[in-house]
Length: 261
Image (tube, rainbow, N blue to C red; front, side):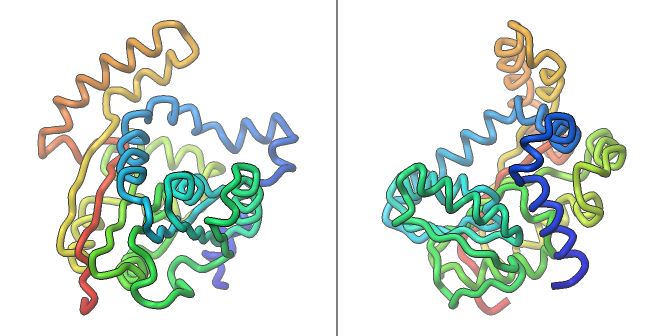
């Protein structure tokens, strides 16, 4: 394993360890960015709803599975799911959680290099990933995702975007929250469009611009109505081609993998 991948493995082992959860001060330090996920309900619902509608009776790969959330979710809705992650601690957590939720017989989890998947061609109907592509070499990742999908398969990706200078400044000011590779490889427009070499069809949705301001009031009674109002503003702003790439996150669905690219 190269230095970059070893750093990713060790960092995420630490981040998902029981030891970190048992140390409140260090846990707060290394999870300080989780406050922003208080406002991502709209993108999370879009992603989850698409998976739930699409997964029954299908073979699903949870790519960079972490603690196994999407493998478990799809298994609960009729899929046979496999999760892979470079972090052994994450994979063990996923196995434990799948057993706790009663889907161990419909899931499998493996420590694996996401840039060199140990699966045959055409192994999966769906590949899902959330916040993983900026941890890997994107060209290699897309090639592997396209390879293991069936010709009619689809991939759904949820990624932070790298065009908003405020978001990028925050990332650079909080280096302890991410690996060195991650800071410099947040997904950009050119990266998404480059996926067209591997997939003939891309559908995109953009989420969270002004709604991020609600984070400041997340622990107050006005949070829910404020977030709803700001989401409506985002619905208008993020239709504008010049502005939508400044959103915090995008969800995109890749179809018709190009096996000859």
